[in-house]
Length: 288
Image 1: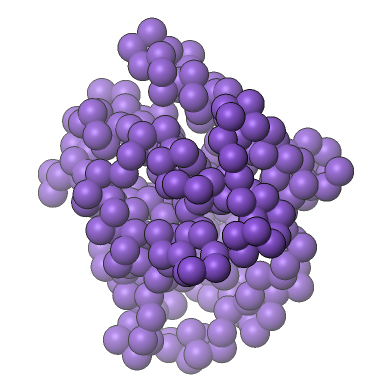
Image 2 (image 1 turned 180 degrees about the vertical axis):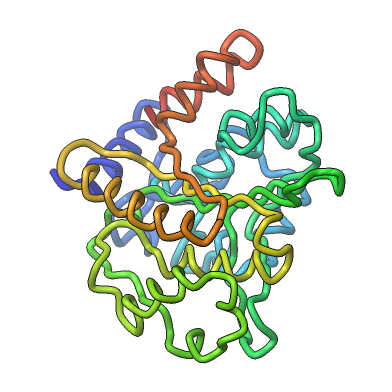
């Protein structure tokens, strides 16, 4: 069983154990992997501001068609996984807790104020569209880091579908690369196509860095790559790709690090099981 199928089957089994009926990507057609309602795929219902975040994003996560359910209804959805991890801490107003568990700040940090989903930071006015960052933790103006940005990956990191490289139009804007020469040199090796990376999508991470840098400056944000680990060869390849990109980013002074969902959930379980038993039970049973 390949890594994508492992994740897919594990999530389908979870839904069956919960007595949740699934439908296909085209309703009666396609592999049954979509819940009939959004709430069936989430630990708790989305708060209104979070619904607005996703509605304003470009991913179409909440918008289905007459023949197809919304993307976030998929049991292997990375956006649903991100929501199931972060939404709870936003609702109970304990955002510093999840930020610290993600190794984005110290345990005694009190400056994390809000969480937004599908946040956009323009790279340049020359581009019509800006990349959507999965999760952004917004901090007080007193904080050195104005935001903690999180790129979330689940099953799509192991899909057979190839990811895009850097469009040459980005390389033509010399000013956006002035303070990240190593990142520019790296970007040229995956432009226009990326034939080097199998699981990591470095072009996407580069765009996030450029947008965050344009908005806040190079020294005022941290970027986390939060990924789902698997067993065997794919895990080793994914880790090596993360290490390669991390080395490039750190050479330019970018505050970048990676963490697996499993490591995060184990840490949360160890530190918060007594205080938050239902949440810990849900994320542990579903994603460990």
